[in-house]
Length: 159
Image 1 (cartoon, rainbow, N blue to C red):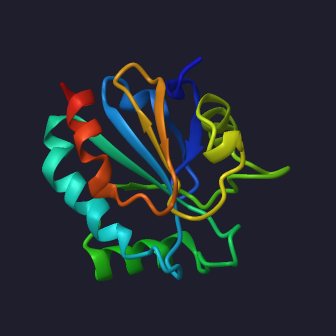
Image 2: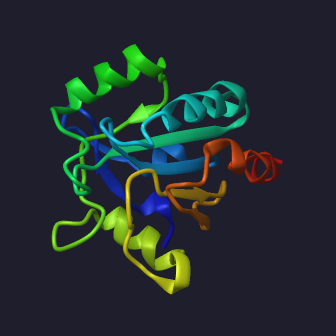
């Protein structure tokens, strides 16, 4: 099983197969618009600008599970990100990353790469999972890891 085996909901509720991203390097991030880490959107956009033409796709999954820091509708979240950070990467419907209602995608991601001290649960907004061109989860980065710090690994995976 790989990331490509999952279907997620788009911002407008439509089903999107992650198989559409086959052959791309993916950076999958659970995000929030009212978080102290929200400025990471700017660095995510810089990575997108620099490497999307070489095969990087950033997949943004808003998540309101952590202190209700992703309020609003998908449309409101998207408008905020585009207006304030000029984001142009893929954004999806809000999801849960932990618990009974967790997204099957996140259940898979967490099973493939555990967090600090072997923890499985996502601890906060802006946890990042890096996926290679064959759909395998190769790295997990905590919320405090700046997107720029992942750039070398992204370049390596892009070949």
